[in-house]
Each structure stands twice: as structure tokens, then as C-alpha cells.
Image (cartoon, rainbow, N blue to C red; front, side):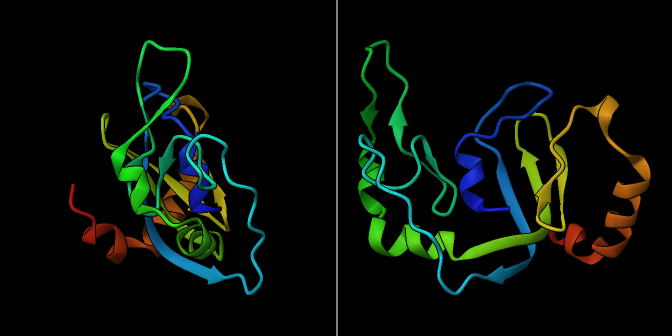
Length: 138
């Protein structure tokens, strides 16, 4: 999973955004693809930079998005390239609002409503990563 996914991913239970990633295992991509800049934010992401945990646009009632001051802290050439050069293999995605965690298993984020989640798969994941999970401050 690319960290960039958190730019648009919402909690399936309460539709909260942004979500937070806890990375347990990652792999480097030697020649990452760097998409064009967003026309408004001037970086790859459109709404939220998960690498720096910065909202890129303000909620306004205007039709046009307003870029936040914090967005200027992100460098397209270095930060976006660095972010896209990493693939998350294992970890957790956290909804900080409802305190629900979703596993990332073999690069696939399993962000599903409670009734669709597989207890056996999540139990195996939890057993494998128990030490890392304990390190997360709840």
C-alpha cells in the first residue's frame, strides 16, 4: 500500500478522515513513479499529506479549495518522491476518531466494515505483530 492512499481513504464505520498509518514492514521501490502535481496543492496529494500529517486544503464554503499554510512545507521533488518510493507491506491503519484499527497485510489495506472483517485473518496478523501493536500508544 502506498501511504498516499490516506489522502482519500475514510473510515468505513464513521466516514472520518484522515486516517493514520502505523508501519510495521515496508519495502523500497528503486524507481518510483512520480505523478504530476495536483493543480491546487502543487504536490501529489490533493487533500492530505500522510507523510507529514498535514491537511493541504481548508474546508470552506467557497467553490474553490484554499491551500493551507502548512502545505508549503512539502516539497514535491523530495517529499513526494520519498513517500512514493516506499510500499507498506504490513501495518495498521487507525481511525483516531472511533479508535478502530485496520490491518495492512501483504501490501493490501483491509479497511472494511465490522461485519465484513475476517476474524481468523486478523487474529493471525495480531499474533504475528503483537510486539509492534503493543508499541502503539492507544
